Each structure stands twice: as C-alpha cells, then as structure tokens.
Picture 1 (cartoon, helix red, strand yellow):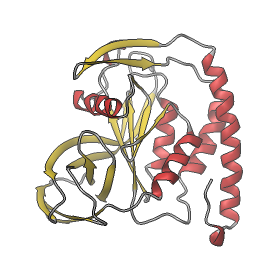
Picture 2: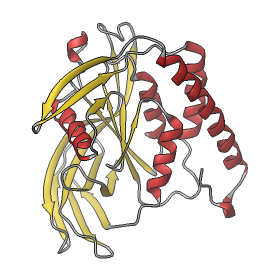
Picture 3: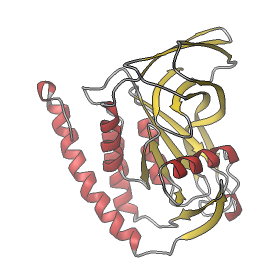
Picture 4: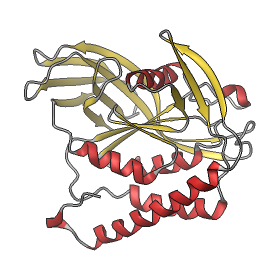
Length: 294
C-alpha cells in the first residue's frame, strides 16, 4: 500500500492496520460465499459477441459483514495525504434487486464522501425480472457495462462490479482490491487538462491535451442524485430499505473530440443535482479527465 514516507503519521498507521484486517476478513468472506448457492446466469449478445450476466446470489454471514462494513467505512472514507487534484472515477454497476449488491453499495457510500474520488452509481435493469424493478435502472447503464466488458476482453458482466477510471474492474465487494485500484490510478499521467464552471443554467467546459496525448475522446455530462431512500417490497431484498448514493439520473454524450485543438463547450444544466464531466477514450476506453460541480 503506497503511503508517502515523508508524511506518514498516526492516521496512516491506523489505515494500514485497518487495511490488514479488511484483507483477512475479505478472505474469510470469499471462502464463506464460495460454498453457498449456485450462480444465476443470463446469456445475451452484444455487437455480435456473446456475454454472460452473472449474479452470485450469495448470503453473507451477519457478524463478519457488520465488522467489514465498519472497517470498510473507516478505510474508504478517508482520503490519503498524497491525494492529487485529479480525481479518480469509480463507477458502480448495481441493482436494488440483487442480493449480492448491498455490501458493495456500503463500500460505495463511503467512497461518495471523498473529494479525491468521483463515485457514480449506474443502476442496471437486467435483474428487474427477479421480482423488483429498480426505479433507477436503465438499459443505457447496462449497455455501458457491456461496452466495458467488450473493451476489456471479458465475456461476463456482474453485479456488483466497479470500474475504476474506465480501466480496472473490481467484481464484488472487495475493499482491498478497490483501494489498490484507486491508489494505482492516482499515479496515472495527466493527459488532458479539464476545467468546468457553472453560471446559472449554463455549464462551461474547457479542455486541452497535455504531453502530446491524442484522441479521439468522448465527452460526457452526467447528473446524479446524491442520496435516495427506497423501500424494497419484492424480490431478493424484500423488506429492506436502501439508501443509495450518487445515483446517475442523466447521462449524455456532448461531443467527440480529436484533441488536436482546445475544446470549448457549453451545456444546459438545471436544478441542483451535481454535474460531472468525463473525458474518456472512445469505445469505453480509459477516463483521462474528470471534473465535478456540486
């Protein structure tokens, strides 16, 4: 775990201890989950290639899960001292109808409090048939997840799954693996300088490439609900009330930019939902720049 030696203090020592405890608790969870109910699978076709949708359908031991929840919240909600100005983007693909998703949703809630991470929850619709229709689920979100799978050479998509900076996928609730991915992408070389500003209902977007970076890039605008509570009345999670965080409510492609000349765009934004702009390599590639206005 890469800590900055010159700024190591008691907080970092505590995080290192928590990191170790989570590692072994997570290992225990993995063993517990592997011997339970078989996976559910759906098969589909995307751009001429077959993809499997995998739902682990696992039950989590109550006490270890509570312990992990407390530890993970402490671990993931604290930004390290070496955090940079460029935030890391973490996309969670989840569903309120998925019994395996609550632990990942808890991890994601902790991430949503960090300033050095832009956490975005894409609720998918392909588990609606189980009995509960996720009110935030959208086919476009599932399409984005499938596009990531195709770009990454994967033949299956999962819930829960997190994609870090458009490149690294973390399947399930794995805090150690997620932390390692976030810390790894903090050191990504800057390729695009992105700046956004809001004036009333107008969002101004300016970007330029750095160090000879070349496009094409897709420029996206996203709006999200910071928090929403839902009572689950049917399906695998019936009887529970979920508080989901940073739920993507609107996602639109603004432009495809070749990067050869500076980019200057405006977009209309109304209401008080936070706005996020992503600059991403085309065809579900790496996210090279991100900015947010709350």
